[in-house]
Length: 112
Length: 115
Image (cartoon, rainbow over all chains, first blue to last red; front, side):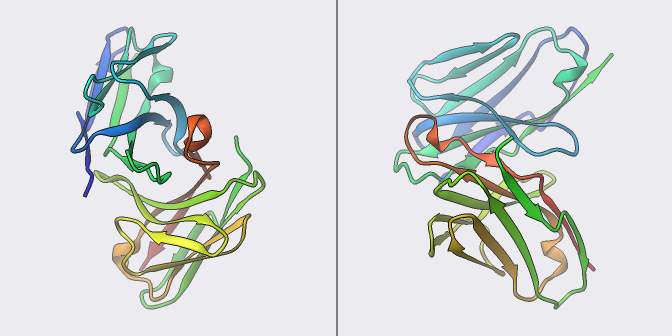
């Protein structure tokens, strides 16, 4: 079945350093979404990418969707303590069933 | 946050007992989902519903059943709870499958411990 792999599983950075998490799907995706889960909280939608090669920015966060629509990345510039949490990518297959396959998540710790 | 309520928020039960978790939404969204979250596994889909009385299995459906008799309610039942079902359970909703309608909104979660 479809799988979405996400790396790294954990990342510790010093405040001000950059951070990147990568997501790879075993199959072509119709779209990919990114969610953030704060410690003790629930996943919250960040963004959706639909087009091949798409790049979107939200302040210090940059999201990319690969040309083949099988991989994606989230890059955070100059991390802050408020960035702490687990970031999940979630891919929807080409069948548009509404089902998302989530990556395992990358947990980001930021040292002040 | 979307109007999603999960109950109970915490539950401790014994092996072999039945358990039902409830997800209630006030958004009139078509799709509803049950996930479990375990360390190292991210969010894994248990069952989902694409309409009243329309449900389908996810990747980890063994030992779980669901029912959706009304648009607003999606119940997850563990017929005979096992320790391997100790987890955090999240309900999610989405409105559809095109544009922004496939964005999922999550409830606060239910922490279940099976002793």
